[in-house]
Structure formats: C-alpha cells, structure tokens
Length: 219
Image 1: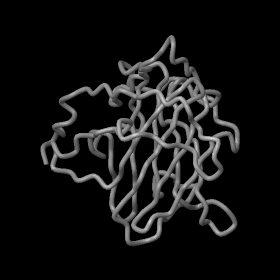
Image 2: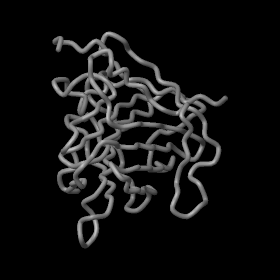
Image 3: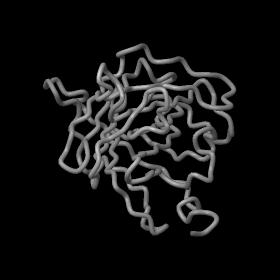
C-alpha cells in the first residue's frame, strides 16, 4: 500500500440529498434513504473492499444516517465506555466546514453509534457523544435520549439507522451553511474498519482538515 492513499489525492465533495419525510412516523422504522443517498468512498482505488453501505440524508429537522453492515458471522461487540473500540459507526461533523484548521472548534462534534453494549444485558444499541481530542473548544453535548437510534439484526450483520435532530447539531443552518465537514468510520471487531478516506495512520479523529465536505442539496 502506498504511503499516501490514492483517495487522499482527491478532496471530495459529497452531495447529501434532501429527504422530506425523516424521521418516519412508522413505529420501528426511522429512515428509508434511497440508493442515491449512498456515499461512495472509492475504496477500490486503494484495493480495499467495503463491508458497509453508508447513506446520509438531510432536511430542516436534521441529518439521517443509515448503515448496513454485511458479511458478519459473529455477534457484534460493544462497550459505551470504549466507543472507538466497539462495533458500530463514528461520525464526525463540522457545521462550519472550517477544514483549514487542524484543531476542532465548537462546531465540530463526534458521535458514536454502537450496535450493542447498552441495557441491563449489554445487548442493546448505544449512542455516545465524546469530546474531540485537542479541540480548541468543545461542542455542546446532546441531551440523553435526544437522538432516535435503532439497530435491526440481519442474517449476516445489521442495519443501523439514526436521526440527529438540528437541536443537537451545534451551528446547523442549511440555508446559511449548506457545506459541512464530515468523516466516518465503520468499525467491526470481525471485519475491520471502513473509512470515508485515508487510513488509520492519519489522525482524522482529531484533525478536521482531513475530513471531506458534505453539501446539503435540495432538489
């Protein structure tokens, strides 16, 4: 593998499609994001195979995240005290897209969606927000139970869906700031780690200048 991943040679701008009905009113289902909402991380350029389908959508109420993990043979593992060592998704967002800065501002947030680890039996999904390392200023924390979040078991994996309300996204203003900095990591103890770009050798977890751009588009 080259020292610098081929994907790093391109600074990607990803369109994030407008989804009017989100979250859904039906019980047991939060989202129904279309195939056009899929984020292509161009892993094939670096001869990397994906194991997760990642989709994002937006509306005035907030952002929707849908991730399907495939190819598992073992149960997911999780611990809310160690979110980055658990099976699930971490999403980094910067509502001001200030990618010239190497240190996070109060508009940068780090959200963890764990497939398991919560509840009396530690077998329920868990939502965790943590501070970003070396941040110049910490973003506000989302109130407990303010983020609708579900995980649906599948035969060879799971479907994870979450809705981040505008109230928990510090600085979220689609009209004035339609471009967001963002990055994701899908981690699985069995399958490895799938990243939006780069590799684990780059400090994407604390450096917003390494993130990509998400453009909120209203068709």
